[in-house]
Image 1 (cartoon, rainbow, N blue to C red):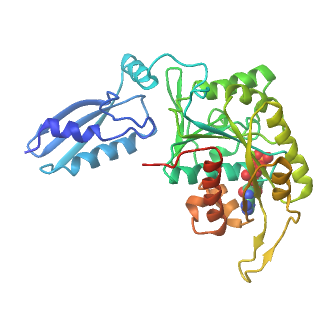
Image 2: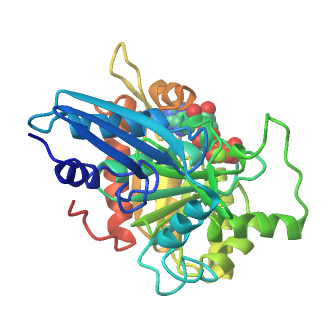
Length: 359
Ligand SMILES: Nc1ncnc2c1ncn2[C@@H]1O[C@H](COP(=O)(O)OP(=O)(O)OP(=O)(O)O)[C@@H](O)[C@H]1O
Ligand SMILES: [Mg+2]
């Protein structure tokens, strides 16, 4: 015979998919009724129409169905009252809100991914590093700071709005990465026009009003070039490291040097350089082509006195996976580009002093 306590113990091991806390501790378990071998549970969702309700229902019924003596599980859904939701919000924040969750005492390694010019593959590289780090066992946040040309939602296959808990924004989780992008907030592809102070406020709320929950690492996809966004973020994320993405062309390298000069001006250390689109292997003959000759990645790294963290080949899988919303390290982990990106993720982790994941 199954007891109510045994059911609750099993539910205690079920985590909310975005809050990463036990659903029992979050107060999401309403009623639990046991009748012989049949169990009926009511789960209280934090918000009505919670986008993850099917996933929560699945986790609950799986956790209970495996208990010996259980032959049927029924999971009903309800919604929390405003008061209950406020309680959850307070319990997950655990104390008064800080000015920035990523201040000097934060355990999170913050990595700003910069490039001098557009189109060098910065967002593609950032998404792949995030997924590779999550697969390596780190908890990972990814902040899309490219407020004009955001592309992270599409590349990560995430298109729903984040859940709000009062004034707290719960990041959207995709491929094991916690995401925030202005793209989640705009209804369509209308360009967003920001004036300086508004821009700073938007970035500030992305840093302070999002429940990042102290991840091991926060990757930030910067807009191309050097400008207001960089200045704002340097203020909001004082302990950040900068990684510069460039292509092999020497002109690109010269432009990328400006991104490094910007890091210098705001006194953030540059952890290294990643060269993208380094070569192309013809799939039919295996011949290697240096499409953009120049050795720009190594030249820039030498110039800055930082390591070249790796080179990513030009591969149609990288572009295709990005368009499909599944980064290549997840879609085609055995491809040459994916292997390079996994190695680069490990190199970046070492360069910023991210401890090896233990879990
Ligand atoms: N290694 C690669 N192999 C093939 N295609 C790539 C590679 N890296 C990036 N791409 C493609 O190149 C294009 C530009 O990449 P991406 O959007 O990541 O660059 P970006 O530097 O973030 O650009 P933007 O300046 O617009 O933000 C995309 O279509 C992407 O799929
Ligand atoms: Mg981009």
